[in-house]
Length: 301
Figure: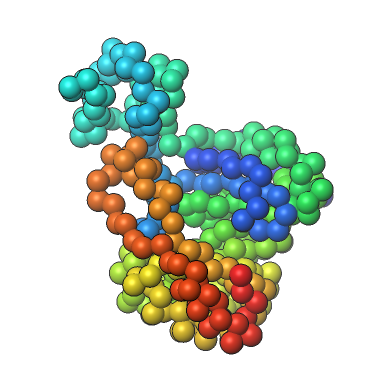
């Protein structure tokens, strides 16, 4: 048994808990999304996860124009213009007083602080589904490895209950973070977004030397599924080099993830206007890349 009694009140920033997922590891899974990321991918479908600072999210479709937020906001952040609720984010101090008055949940904080024991209790709600489907819990983000101490404690808690654990990571952290959680993590879902360092920097804001080095080391120590986003005319020219690199290390499986536009509405809710929109790959593109990886004897989906 893993001793977590001294750390059960350690807290982490969690922005979503998604239940009954079948796309983030084996079986039926609960996916816990950590807030904060050190990459800024141009196609990010969880833009609310990038900042480690609290943010105000405005779900305008929920707003019933009750006026409660107008009354409570000392900075006059909220305005009614031509019958529409407008937020002047230059005035917002993220005090979140408005979220406490908004029972329609149009105004909500991006993340909440959860202790290890609170998150453990939430995860255990779905324990029966894990057992019946050989599923478990996946910790995603954002980048969960940026909160590695909290991540380690919740992984220990899960292992105490015999729950299969997975960590979804971009790998841009010191390898000591991986060493800290290795004894308690059954599977790593590891992103490769580009192979060329300059291309990677252009697409994500950072180079990928550390990412590829960590993956090479990790593949010798743990079960790893590599996940590769496929964005036409953005990183598709990288696929040959990615497949060649993966053929030289020990990878359990590769998942090709087609770009989708489901996250576009999230940018608006955060007041982000600079949104990059790309093309969703068709079946021909996906099958061509799939065959490329298969030709390198890589187990690919």
